[in-house]
Length: 192
Image (cartoon, rainbow, N blue to C red):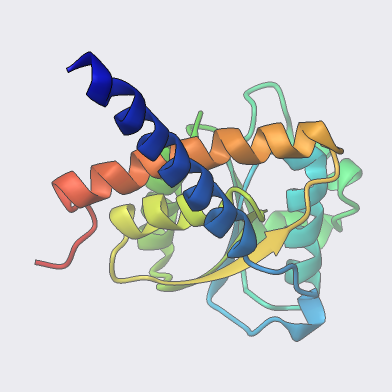
């Protein structure tokens, strides 16, 4: 049994390494807001040092969706903070921007976004998050709203450089593997 342990661990490590390379090479490419199609609404998962929210605000400004949900807002952040930091007009804040305070993680984002989309009867959403986070975010969103049309709008997260970027991508890849395993076993989000 002990003789088999090393070859098995080596195969698992090789599979994870090859999977990571495929994951990194297949990350969605960054687009411009001008090149983006129009959808019912825009949703952004917080994080990324504000890069994600800036990109989502730009999409709203370019009328790529009629409303914007910022999901996973920290409880201490107020509407005025968002307006000031991301240069949103008072009119845009009043008519078109909703702040979601319930989500604490990607699964929570998916539940919060699904409830918001259901309330507003939105079925076609532009999803804004970091490039490395997009694959897992889309899986969670599809599980929470399997009939929705989700259009990815990935943004580059400039907070991490060099080894920080690699570390962030490896952590995200491992979370992605876990979610893919969950989907393979439980089939969450499958149309039955």
